[in-house]
Image: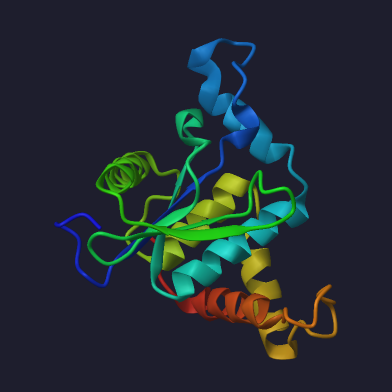
Amino acid sequence: MCPAEPAVARRIVVAVAAAAQAEPAGGLGDLPAACQRAVADSPLYERVLLLLAIALMEATGIQVQVCDDPAYSDVEGFVLGRPGQAIIANWVRGEGIWHVDTARRALVLSDFREASGHASAHSVIDAPSPAGRLRALAGYLGIDWPWLRGRCQQLAQAGTAALLRPRSRHISTAGVDAACAYIGRMAGEHTS
């Protein structure tokens, strides 16, 4: 955690540029367009699931920054925790299994702080509130925010257990329900 950040603040950096690693046809100056095309080419359900995952993080107090700079596509997902520690959580490029670990080495923490600073300065969802960040993320992902809020309100009331069937008895739909409830409660909130 950066010394200037409050002790309770947590931040996670999500790099969405993995699909745009190759140099785009228009050259390196066309990298943002390549990232936007990669997002646009993703099916709606994948974009909604990404947004729900980020909503769940925001609901637990983790401030999420999304950076579409391809230079950061190989940086694993991480949370800067208490001083001298980062939590790494990644399911990308994991051969079907997700990876969780902690990092305490000064060099690794320095790299994560640098990535966090860059993502904060260049976040495509920069906003002072969770509602604002989620609304900006919906816009970036091409998801209709009023539709999503309405569906989340409905799903929060009904629950998702009858709709979703986890493959393992060790997994529940509680996270999806919590993310839907969190977004559904934002209906009347100022989202800037």
